[in-house]
Amino acid sequence: MYVKKADEIKKEIVEVADKTEIQWLIGEDTGKEFFMRKFTMKPGGGMPKHYHNNYDHEQYVLKGKLKLGLGDEVFEVGAGNVVYIPKNMPHWYKNVGNEDVEFLCLIPKRKEYHMEKVE
Image 1 (cartoon, rainbow, N blue to C red):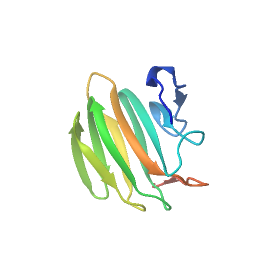
Image 2 (tube, one colour):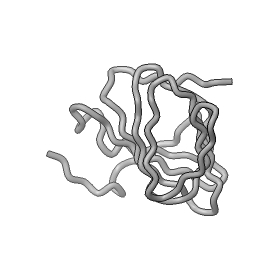
Image 3 (cartoon, one colour):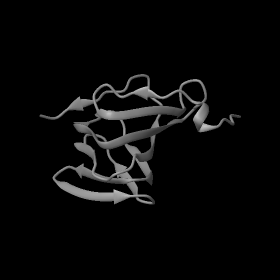
Image 4 (spheres, one colour):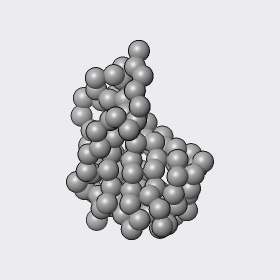
């Protein structure tokens, strides 16, 4: 069992992204089958085009306005949108609003996580 306020969980800089932080809300010490992460992306921030070859992930946008590239398509998403990204799907993010974007990202528990940049 695990109950904690998200504000008490350490934020880390996402090195491969711009103006983006991550919190492992449910991580190695608490998750058995999956992990839950919360991303916070400042206005103008983003994540480069990349893919993951060993897991799918599911996302739920809590606040803000985001351009999201999935394969060859671009979507504008905001609070209340749900996103599913299968493994090997190139994707990228860009905060296009005037406020922080916050979204939850759930991934299966793995020993290793690979993020491959797409040029």
